[in-house]
Length: 274
Image (tube, rainbow, N blue to C red; front, side):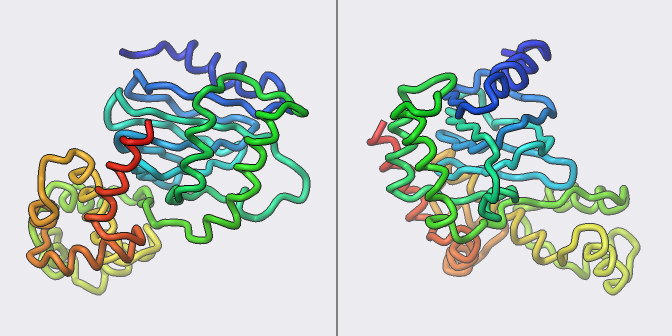
């Protein structure tokens, strides 16, 4: 079900920022497949349940899996696109304060531990402006205050947007062949580059190597498949081009800080707490 641009603008501009001193809270099933590019004067904490949410800024595409949150600093233009309309999105919008921790000035994706999960679930009964001086405002502010302490690692769950059209074609090729083992030498040959020149193009345009991009993209696809719960871990590994389950599991752990099986078990725990 699509929502009109007016309704989207009214929600983000008029309601979120209407009271500059309040903490604004909004929890709902997404019910739409795209929130167009917008920004707000408050910083946003977006927590997702049930499926993947794609958050896109001018320079990066963020991949927000279930049981993680993204911190979006005030004033940053972004669009939001859930993978399905059944995604539950829990949002808290915070006024910017003086002398804030550096944590709040940078966008990033972080896992939600048990403490933060329980605090976020507690906010389920709220909606709208939380006024300063009320208990709910104090609890929401406490959620914000603990983030720099309990979220030391910004997960690399984002991919830069290519500026060079030639590179865009290569990235689409990678996207369409994630189930195969893609060799850099073969990609260079396929698109008429020397390995050295293509390596320079990746570093100049994306700020990362081909293998870094390829590895992150495979793991992001693996998270999507795991959340669908249709395939075993072994089958997911094969779907993203890994012939070895231990290699897949180790790579997954390096990026998300947990094994694929643990990620699935965490999702089951979340279902039980609803």
